[in-house]
Length: 128
Length: 123
Image (tube, rainbow over all chains, first blue to last red; front, side, top):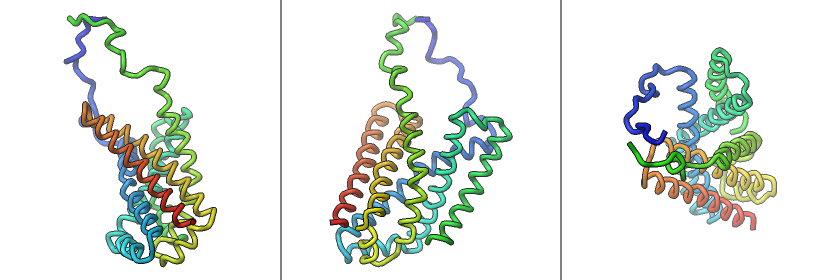
């Protein structure tokens, strides 16, 4: 084993060669939403710090967060939060060895896409 | 022809004793977040855009403060684990190490900043 050539063996096809499928797209989106949520989390921590430091500074930060761009970022983050949450539930189900058949996995894929939109709209209508 | 033993080649690449730890922490924190995220949205979504006095009054109460504190600790731990995987997948060498260190400091730094702010509001 010690003299096996490990440097330039042919590689199996990777993501760049495959056609995008529902499974890969929803998985990539799960990663993107999870990491992009840093922006919303950062803004909320900033908002908390502003609330702690007094009414004047809070007004400044609040104006930024509730501006048109702020609203866009916050609604985007809300959708990302629901998408990542539902995507996470799918992973928790998969981790138990269930729902791994292609048809079932595809149904779960559509469920998290539609579910994230529905939950975002519901949150905006009911809570905000 | 490399004069390296099998053992030497795999040394330092990670052992089976700790390989599952990251996965398990992700599982535990995601289940915790499954409980926390709805509570967080119920508490904080209506607060955004409210005047300073209302926000401070609400955050001074124990239950909203508890939800906020738990959310800060669990989210940023979960984020730190996730972003580490992201970096490990796409970045290599010294840049990888620097990126992981920077994102770890940022994650726990933001969590700590949020907790300090909560304490200041409550007191």
